[in-house]
View 1: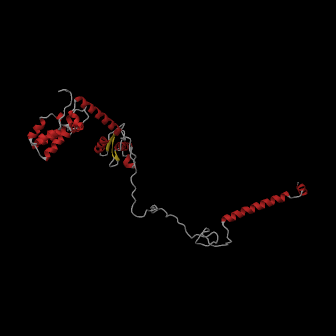
View 2: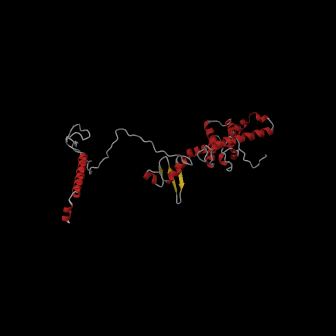
View 3: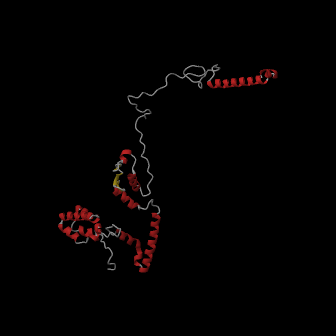
Length: 288
């Protein structure tokens, strides 16, 4: 073995192919894959016990294989990969095509160029993300969170439920406005940078909208205008001075009367001034 410290995993698909030849069945298949994909040690043991209750030899067949080779709960935590099949390796082998028949040096050069172009393509794709979390990982976070977030504060932790619009602090339920704990969950739910939050769509209620508010029994009704409109020109009801069709009416409007009054005051003031200036000098000396 060239790498004694390397983590060795078996393709679970091939293990199940050998397992199903002796122990088949839909229930046995579900329990097998549940034991392989679980990350919980106790759930793994429970799945093996369920398999043993159906067929004891099937449990002995799986117990003979070390869990670190085929179950997620026993994988090395330093290797951040949860694959239980070798589909990724098969996909890599299919990319080599006819270069596998060439020399080792030519094969290594092809792999080097293929990886360089692959890294550049991934780099361009990563630059289009909206945040530092990959879209596939962000999708898993949203699916697993189910709208529930626990926020650790200075004194205690608060759980916010985005689906029910509730928070343990009680502010969201009382005011209807998301509190700081809920806003943190909303920001994480829609991405690290946060997508613009749009208001809920307005739904128009059936019927004609009411313009007046409902008044209490002790409140007075709203005051309304009484009487009819009286024209300022002809003094007749039913219309105003703008729509009056009477021609040659002797009744003046308020603006006309005010303008005429100003003209009269100006004429009287100029007349008095002229009289004072035209008095003889003898009369002025007598007055003194």
